Image (cartoon, helix red, strand yellow):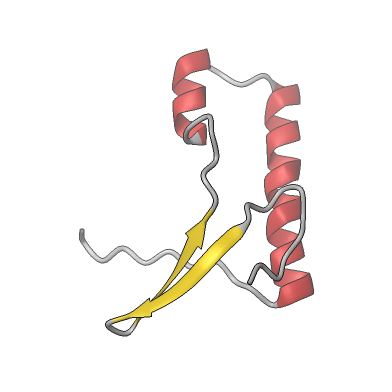
Length: 78
């Protein structure tokens, strides 16, 4: 099922289409959201921020360039 393998990309468990919506079921990532880590620490050092952004950019670039996958967020007012 999972067609991607990259250290900065979480694993796909399943995909589901329901009522015209396509959803991905992804692995659980322990540690919470990045926002809450910023709140907990108070700030990120430049070094830590650089490390995180390189991981994020590397994962997005892999999905986009290698697999043609694109991220899109749509606010539906929910």
